[in-house]
Length: 159
Image: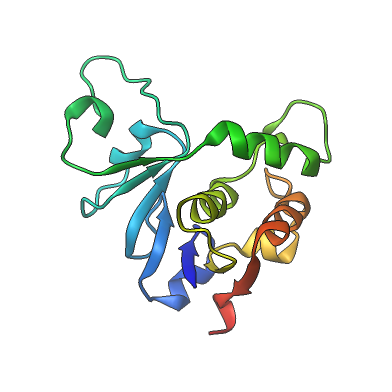
């Protein structure tokens, strides 16, 4: 089972290493997942392989992302076009807003499926998604349906 840490409050009590952590690095991990390359340097931490949802650089000089600064970290791209298409039918609100795009946590599940072909993912820090929080900036209900259509989701909050 691949484990993924989002940035929700349950990460604090979990305290174990995971396979993938999202950009805020809420827990130690084997891989870091970011939507864009420049997010890698925003939170300091150990240099670990970077999984990128969008493998493009938007830096302006001076370059601050790992794509621009050299091969000091392994960069693993994800087929974001594939996953954006997969996500599209789950979107409930068709008016342009942040609710239309999947959260970083959902994109990290996409990456785990693409890179390792997993059928089960343990998640921690996915509190809003697992609880269906409708006040969140993203669509928690759509996100939960989407990731559950791909993998068996194991809620690590109770472990």
